[in-house]
Image (cartoon, rainbow, N blue to C red):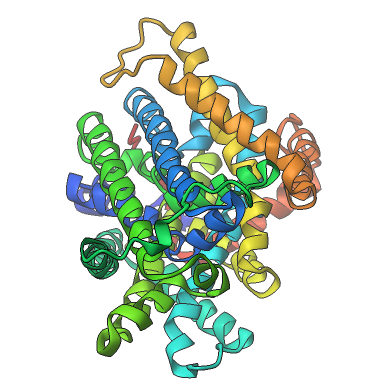
Length: 483
């Protein structure tokens, strides 16, 4: 018998039954995770936001390309961090190792109070809408029905991730294949129409009469949301097979594939749909399918829904590891660094995310949620790459299997800071709320984390609750070090 952190006696087996997160993420699974989380709802809902805030078709395509370049700069920077800092946890662990515990905890706090619930709510709401919208044509699906279907989808993803890492990874691979099929079903008809001479929607493509520089950062927010997910492989570093090789190859292949796919998809949208049709559509991919695929148009909503489900699945799979890593570092209750003794999954970390996600689903709308969480998300990503520069100078002799020129993290940091600064001017309400919620983490850190000792009554109650939950969930701390 072995005594877990919460004080309970839990039977421990040896060998294959030793409790730890195993390295099951191969190169194929890593690419599937990265592409699968990037290609989600964004390419099917963000074209409207990018076009609306950029003001023209030509400029919107440039924004899509620029977002791909910015994402590549960030992904290469994160690849260096992932090959020299071997811990899972992504943004949180990199800030902890480079800039210290306060920015790391604020990133953790904003992640699970705001960023992660809002991000997953955006993706899952798109999943729910695309899944049931065909049943209500020509009307729109009732909002309550969309949210109920969305809640079922979130619950299913949590259950799958709690059940098995291998199952979760294999399902992610299958869903990635399906979503690439959905992308091809949009690209091929659009390219065929373009080759047939349908250029009318690209006339005056760079007309700037409707462009508002104040809204341009919001166009980048919508575009960068669609690319979001390139960093998730860094959340699961300890579960990646040969991370020194796998992580750099994964981000390079994934970003090139997705950037080309996104640009061609948007060209296809604008070949078939006018500016007015894109802006008026609640589901751009469905409007496109209605005009091009005719008898097969009903397949597009299902494929798009599966694409959103894959992004939702990958995001939950990866982000639970940040909470797991933070708990292991003492920045979160110890229960969340524990693993199911049979399933070898971080079950408590997965379950914790569910209540806030459901709250966001029933309270928010897609575009409001996008601006709400984007400020904190991109601000901290800029801090991570600043931290890489600091880390490079602080530890010049540290082995770095994959090393990028400093201009790459430097440019990414500048772009992140510029976008979030401009957003405070463009959308001060949502971004201001996001900033304020992030700062609420400061009193939490200094009162509960930084403080050396807590009253014995509090620690006793905490230990009692942890012990009971540990027994209920059948979880214990990781038994061997994996970094």
